[in-house]
Image 1 (cartoon, rainbow, N blue to C red):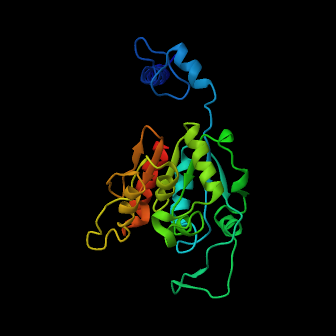
Image 2: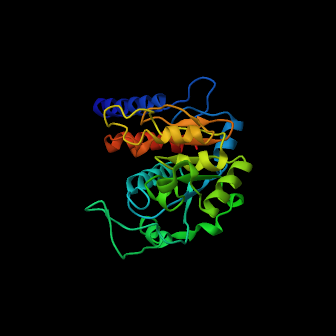
Image 3: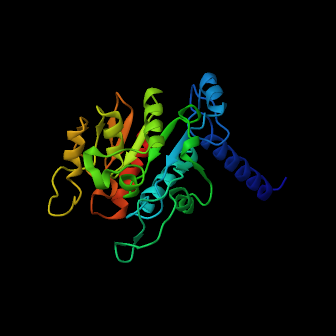
Length: 273
């Protein structure tokens, strides 16, 4: 064999040995098919088993911040749940809205009526179920986005404050999940539903003072306290976890701030729910 061919062969062998050494397992570890730290046989067995999928019910209250669900909150929650691999089913009560708000004016549209289930279907892309059919036995957690619909359609909080009534199916669902020890997530003004129905829970709607208009709905914290619940002061990017009752809340648009801060807070709530 010529000296040129011998040199080429040595170079080829050397390059292959270098690649083999780079991907060789470290002492005491076994190599994995796609790299990364090696696992023990027991860990590999558990990793190969399919992970249980969390089944989460998301309860909407219409479509639009002033008379239904806050769309950004609902969308953000759905994104976080999707990224976590949850199996989501969306529900809403089949009832008339309290009223219809012209969102360009912030004023009621006289003579117009809409249905909460029908309007919520816009957010759900048509895949929605009557809240009357929601059972805690079929889901691992329930999440309630905010928006004035929580205070107008899921309850009468917007009109009656602490003396409000909660929709019978909303009350039933909250009690079912609570009694089953399953997590309940609520954001924005929706935590008042838990305060009214479950009473002794810990929730947050953010701050207890308006702080120059940054927290325009801070007064809700005092109503929550009057209902016998504990209000916990948090920032907009934080979520409060009531470990005992498995209730997770975050302020969301109770704070007048940039949307990415709202998104981060909702992510904290979704992660803890």
